[in-house]
Length: 269
Image (cartoon, rainbow, N blue to C red; front, side, top):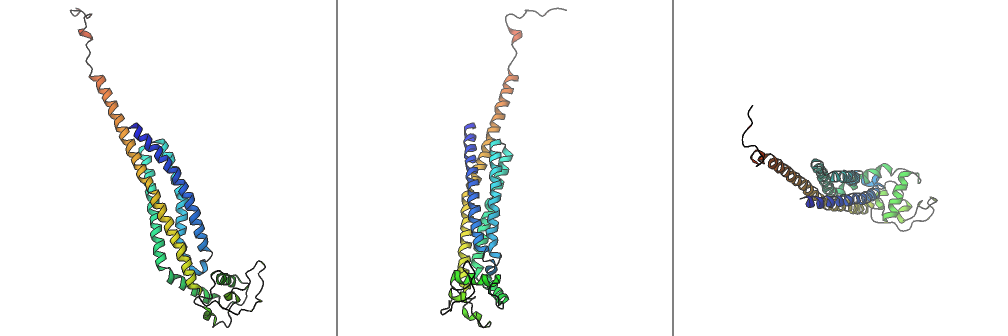
């Protein structure tokens, strides 16, 4: 049993190292995906970013759980190892919930993005300053996705002018030059569909990262609880051996009075 518990000990220690490494990888992936969606938060809304935020937080928590698992495994205390296993279970459950959340958002994102973009367009369409932050956001969006407005150039009919960024021109270089080029060909597609596909792709990446992490990290649940069981079995075996030794010691008869050197008769007083 001692060999078995030792093997499980080193296996769980190895898992905790890999657990921490997966947390670092998850932190980088979720942080990158969160950044990619955050830069378009005015168009897609913040609700789309919540699964990535949760995944980023879980990456930080996972590092702490890996450290706790390492310490408890080295101590070989049964209750502490069980508690570490429970923490791993909670991490895996939350990461799987993050996967489900991202997939639900992925399925309903089209309506949310179109509503958010339409409201933002109505709020900023009357701005005349070409260098205002809102105008520059629309310009960058137009050039990045080669689109115009929410559903097309017709969105700017009410404003009386179409920005030059709708044909890939505008104050987007390092000097932020004013509009000087003559726009002859407009992008006919709207940005709503392009941004919808962009957000869906990144949400799918978030979901796949959460699912992969939950599946890989779930292996630690079995290793940790097998170690806890091995510790318990070894402790019970140790208790049985100690009890057997004590019982054999007290049950041994004292034959000293029957030895040949013992007096034949008891002394008289």
